[in-house]
Length: 315
Image 1 (tube, rainbow, N blue to C red):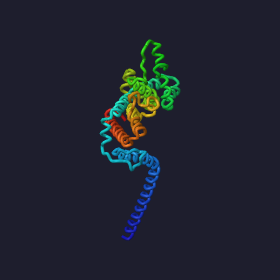
Image 2: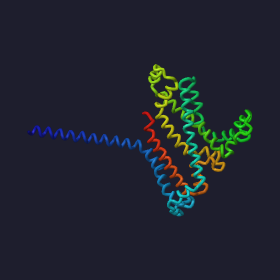
Image 3: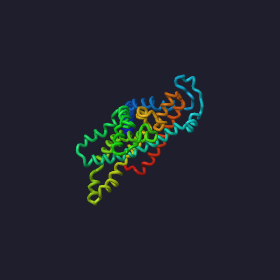
Image 4: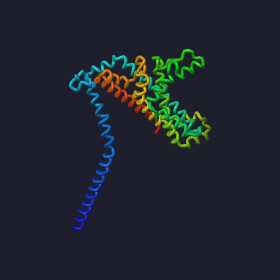
């Protein structure tokens, strides 16, 4: 009897020691994990989360940042009501929607180029670098180059168009009807390289067995592309779609250098109009309201994409 009690006590003490060592090890692992994510967590909190809440608070005031916080007066939803009636802001939203159309166009061109380069082209590395160069180049330098290319009178593009018999070519950046088209063309040109590299990586991860089985069944190149390549690349396409739409809403540097939102707000986008209201017109409260509206739009679009991807993305 005494031996059984001693054995039970020993087993109990052993279990407690093992449990204690397990908890200690788990605590150390959790602590190490938190230390690894702490820099990113602190940076995200300080630079993103806190500014969002500050912008939300400022959006309900008429604050002018050069006057100090004591000049801020609570105005409720007045900034948001003014936004609905602000024609330049509405025009900026419409322009942003048009810029979104550049995303699928860029993806289609990139996918076609990726398929061709992946299968039938020598010097693949060379072409990857060539197409990727615009993406890593300075936006300021690109804007200055395209200002010269799109010059309405002496630009090489219009000189070429007139040489082939087009007497009245578009004035491009100087024409409110063509300025946004010019921006879309430049955006597509600069974004193809990034999309191309991502699609090439996705193509190389598709199992060759699928194509071999399709060939044995007599499938044509188009059938293989439609039924194998496109579905297998759907996660890549979903990633590029989300990042492309977010990038289109962040368009700023190109607009500032290329057109400054003109002519007549025809190329103004939400971020540029926000900058103009905040730092040129000194309407910090109104600019904060625009920023919160932009954040809400991005959240809605992302939510729609995440819901919709379940029907067409194959993981």
